[in-house]
Length: 251
Image (tube, rainbow, N blue to C red; front, side, top):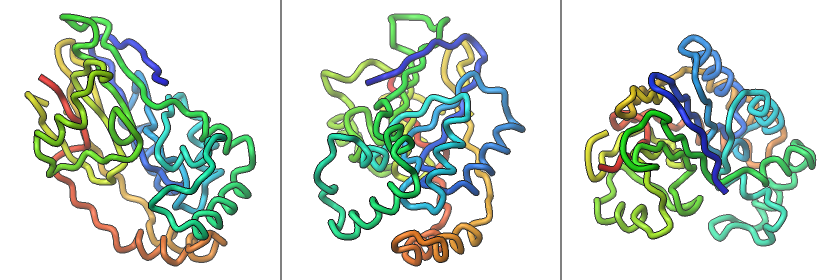
């Protein structure tokens, strides 16, 4: 399922992704957005919860935004039709974490996560040329599924195999999350907060600081399964930008 909207010249789009239950980081980003808006659209590109200590708070905060929210691979864990744990997950650990998540979220929030659309398309209303030629497409991982990552070091031939499918609608720019690495990749032509200037998309990447030790403490002490593991992973993470955020443009 895809949602779409039209933008006129000069309107700006803010895209954020992979909040993963971290309300401290989300609030820091929202505060920065308040200083650098307004935005014609706000897009949350999936993975709202799962590995952070505040899943319910994040879902409520996101739902209170004037934002379009699309699904990520961890949001899909809450789909009603899901029966088996993901192939890359330890079944016992996954079951324990899912039980904690369900307890924290409650059935209504879990149902919201499980019903999110796959993608969102923005079509500049004043774009020249054929329909779709200048669209911005926002997905979680790639336009085809929720798992296969678009990596900065991928060969053009690998990108072709992933992105050039018969089912892929035309787009000029692709915005995505999933890999937790900010970068810009030029693919088959030039490139990209996101702004349509009447002729092309432009992009600005913003880094926002937050109190990571506070989040790690809550992970360890808040009752989340494997909280120590997630806290250690958070504190060991580094910020290694490869240019700009993850956007791809076609020629």
